Image (tube, rainbow, N blue to C red; front, side):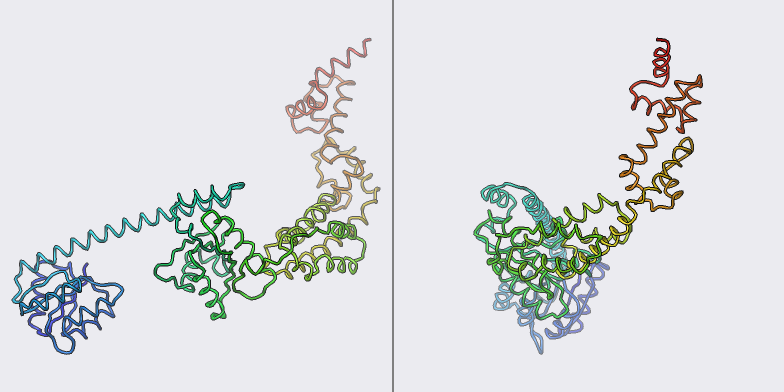
Length: 519
């Protein structure tokens, strides 16, 4: 449906046009009316018009002033001039304002209808072209985004190769230079959706006509933006300061010398964003602010290994002091963020992984905290990471202490072995045996392995095969009977395990034993 505004100070003209249009076009037009230009603008403030038919000579505001005022609007309707005066001066003014048609009173129906149909066809074609352009623009932007994401994942590409990909993606404007930004999506927007957050950032920046930019989300869910100038990011920074409720954190790259530095700029923005670990307030961190960070660091592996050695010794105060030394914030802030990342990796490899490999994994609470502490960037601030890591170490220290206190109580393991020897032919598993001797399942598994030199499953399987061999060599029992007496669930499984361990099938083994006895 087309919104049509008829502007004329004569009511009979307005009513006549309404009657003609309704009879010919039915409900194709939603008709609105005004007696002068001022009323027309008020109507247009409330409803967006597709077409305006206006008289020239009217009180308060005439038609020429009205169509001039319409030129200032962002969305401009088609314009048709209606006048009882065949005045060339009016026609010239109308042409300057892109008026589509100039109709003389009295209105000739066929001329009016031809005009309305022609303008309707033009609007349809214009809409189709706009849809095509929007589709083409979206396709081009999607392609450009896919090429940039490809670049971010590739290793070893030189600037020339990167530039070629960027230019092929249609982002040739980046060859004149530009900037990259990486924006962390606040928690409250992660469930609402990326579109809502993008719209929020767009509103804060207030993109200006002529500014060239592209924005998308990378594989880690951060908003990436490339622009041709730093001005949009300057406005973003000002708006973050103005909006006290804003939670925007963004890293800004140095200026690019050309399209070949796109990946470098992306990495610079990502590195800058990491430094929010040391900043409580939202805002921008520019890569240029970080140029003085030292890279001549050495990860304190010896001190980190000492923390592992202190676990379980009731020396939490000493452990705490050692952690304070390792994570001294004054030292950390002197160096590039890679220093703290290296310390975090070293704790994962030389402390946490070693403890779990040695003692197993006891509680859900420890596992959850370990999973969180394992990634430095699971935290909003450095102090949150430090305190969580410290808490995990204290929990592990208590755990290791309990495990060590039980570690050399071999009588329980010996009792378990006696139980296994007596019940190997039953439906036996580690849970049954550990419950029988009242030991924690995880501790029993580790203690049993250390005492016997093999896992519970391996020990039980070897015991059952040993008992089966004894029966094969000393009785005439059928193989399925021996399988059952040795504790196997079925003869097929028994035969398979026996052959894997002995190299021959059960009956071949019996034949070999009989041959040996006859010698």
